[in-house]
Length: 224
Image (tube, rainbow, N blue to C red; front, side, top):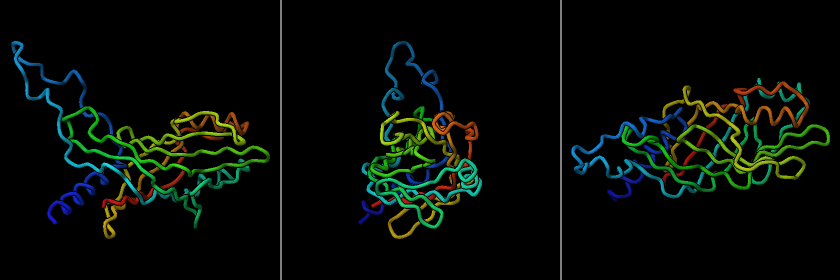
């Protein structure tokens, strides 16, 4: 019972850092070198303070910002979903299908949150006339606060694992729990400086700007 409780708390600790605006803490040059050629305990790899080895659900939901919706209307783009994703009450919902997260003591390693949150077989579509762009298979990298994914145009893959969205956790609300789920709300999802020109080129416009707010994310993570 104590082990399960510790794992649950550890899971919450890891989940609580998933969407913060994380950056590298320290550099390789900051590691203390051994004196006079002697060994150093700091050379040993640190152990994570919390880990979720296999994420199994639940979902990432993005409540679409009205400014983003208005921009789509101006560009005559119709949003939709692919695969297992849903568009309900103004929110895009992508099931979490896998991944892992490890959290280290800040300063003990260059990136103190590492891992990935996978959303395979789901995505967002944008359609204008005969052109349909699909952004799919999202992979959240908490270590750099980025979302990567695949891009296809009219069914043909254009690029895989492209840097699509920035995550800004400066407006993140306190962690909530429901049963064994950890819930984080408030992270801003923004168009990246890679996705913006790609969309502009595809839809023959210059209206999509890097940093455009797509919406506010709510990540629900199963911790058990």
